[in-house]
Length: 189
Image (cartoon, rainbow, N blue to C red; front, side, top):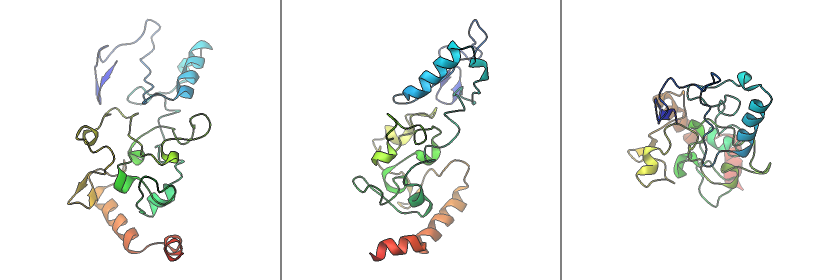
């Protein structure tokens, strides 16, 4: 309502505030997590909405500060650059080959679980980045939903937010060439 992709404006205009002086509070998701919605509604109903901190896209910081990767059961495989795929639960990270956007998407999906049970990545499904203002992302629009877009067939076009591409590529290369003891043990079973 107040943003178009990453640009402020949208249907309501860039400077819109409610009659009560409050900005629009965006709770994105596909669908939005019911706990996120109810917690904001409770804050409104008890008069504590002024305590809710929002980010640059007017999302509540309580839910949209950490990355989806935080709490993901495949985070060790991400750190060790172990490729994964559908149907290979716990045997690799979905970022490298299956297009998971967890390292670039801010949401508490793996900390506030759906039905207190699971999340997309815990069910071995890649994060689609639906809480980010650029959703749907260009790679989704090109029909490559479950494929990591790469340069020269090797390097991911997007790297985790806040990381230098060259440094990330070097780190990933070293992790692939020099696996940790954990990976060596798994491979020798």
